[in-house]
Amino acid sequence: MIPGKRPATEEGVEAPLPAKLQRTEEQPGSLVADAGNVGNDGRVSDSDTDDDNRAPEPSALEIEGLYLDTVNRASLDFDFEQLCSVSLSNNNIYACLVCGKYYQGRGKQTHAYFHSINESHHVFINLHTLRVYVLPDNYEVDDKSLNDIKAAVRPTYSAEQVAQLDSVCEDAYDLSGKHYIPGLVGLNRIKCNDYMNAVVQALAHVPPIRDAMLLLPDLERKSPLVQRMASLVKRMWHPKLFKSHISPHELHQEIVNRSKRHFKLDSSGDAFELLTWLLNTLHMDLGGSRKSDSSVVYKAFRGELSVATQQLRDTRVRTREEDPIEMDAAKPIVRTKVSFLTLSLELPPKPLFADDEDKGEVGIPQVALVSLLQRYNGSTVVEWQGQAKQYQLRKLPQFIICHIKRFTKTELSADKNPTVVNYAIHNVPFGNLLPKDAPVCGSHGNPTYNLIANICHDGQPALSAGSKVPSDLGQSTAVTLAASTAATYTSDETTSANSQYLVYLRHAANDKWYMLRDLQVEPVMPQMIFLSDSYVQIWQRNDE
Image: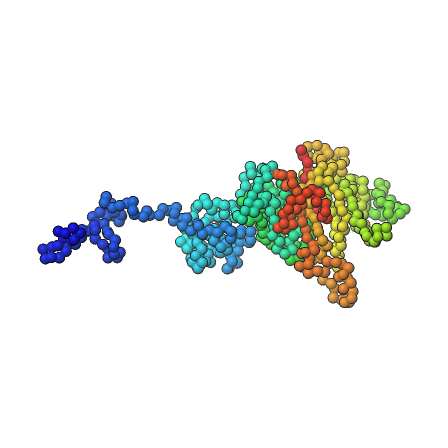
């Protein structure tokens, strides 16, 4: 027989190949093994088969990670409200890890299911449970490479990490390599929410408030305002952000709804009014009561003062109108003790006319902060609503909020006092205002305070968007009125450009000052803080 030829039968027909070398009809050119060498499970057990050349079957881990290479972290943004982009529902929301859009559900006939088929986007994360699934196959993926995404959705902190925030300055970088400092992150400006951004930035740097938001237990049982406030603070201090800025839309929208649109996004608001409302609302939502230690808000900001009240007709007679008011000890005086969260400071009235010696230029008046604080020394008498009042500080809290009253608002106009307030940023002796029999505050009886946050206002004040020129005024009168009140009757765009809040913050970890104006974050020298008009200041007691 010729080598390479098939053996012939007696009739001259070629003999068939052995069974193990026969070619299959379904796949021409491929050989099948002998049926006697195939086990019950369909696998080849013949020793003649080359196992090294056979492709290995994929493992379960390889199947789970089949689509993980399609995850695009640059398109992910978890700052916005968790609503389905199709149905606008907030129930059972999943985020597509390929395009970043939100969809509802993951079963058949759901928006996420259809999105995975139509767009070939297969990896989704449940924003509530943080479990990752592959659709439309609908199986769960548990891979360590997704932990950074889960941390971006819901950052978590340990007690050790929180304790190091004020002592360790950690440099961080986003996905694009941009440097930022955790805690000093810009907030998006939606429209006229600059006053909201300034207040949130200031509260996020008050250690007791910040620590409570970062370590708050049972967050799901808290009110929506507390949940969104805590979520925003956690992202602001997160060292592994995908982007070096954050959108506060979710919290701001809750503030608008909770305040029944008293604070709005489409019109400028007052930062001090928002601060007082937010502190009282957080106090109630955290289970606070009238007791001083019932919530973290009262523990940090609540102080005590005594008020002596006497009717103006019972005060001593003044020979001149500019003479100070003095109480008459022989007449009835009502003394009460009240608690406070903020201290209001009255500025001297601004000059109305120019001085001839200054060649028609009006000099901006200046006043020292220590002089304004004398209102609470127990000897200064002020007039308020037909009564003479005398304030005496009795107990100083760990953090003091000072409100410098700059604005005078009426139905038709808003005026701003440009008086410059001079102050030191370290060791301000608030303890000098306490009487000798006052309880000891902090580690010694005469406490001093350091400035940690300074909310300032730039530009001219503006009324809310609902304020309009009365229609019964003549055209010439309305023009004169609008011209005299500067930015009073301006559009929202002009108001946004001319009236803006910003905040100066001291970062405790590196003891440096930064200016934050919405998305803008810049380091500044301490001497630059006085260039803006201070409106709200937060002071921390120096217990060292």
